[in-house]
Image (cartoon, rainbow, N blue to C red):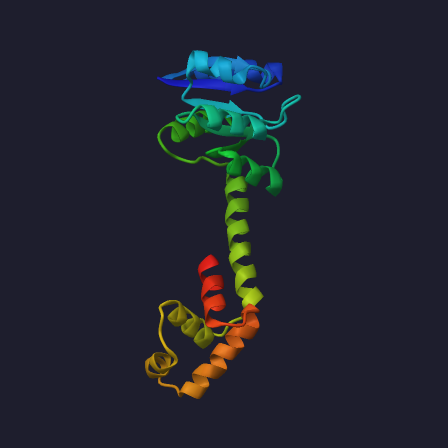
Length: 207
């Protein structure tokens, strides 16, 4: 039996979700709260497996609610359930500890499936949210690549510097002269905005 707690300030929606989970196979709604007041003590009483958390709650936001749940209950998974699709709220919720993000326009079947998936170790997200997450990571990687604009050979040499190769070893590995190695490394320093091999390696490892 998957025990679910709902934190949602819309009374009609909260009641509908309670009914939905109680009718679903092997699920039970053990708490239905309109806000985060006394949430820790309430959850401690019923010990849910999954918390369905709205973001736009009165007084204290659902993002702060995620932090409260994760700080006090290691085993409880949190599924955000919200109308918000903007990047900032998505990533704030995920960073706070939410394991899934579902939009309120999801169907009843999608909601039940998402809770079940979360309980069994998944990270359910509405398709549009998953797309935003993927595009965000792709954008970060593209920005890093564009920021330094290293050539393929410069990138190879930089990785070899991280591995500890000397100028002579680099020349032998890539069949180029030591003076060409020095030229490549000078260009690497300029593009990375560093002044030494140690700084270049450190920046590479950080990124």
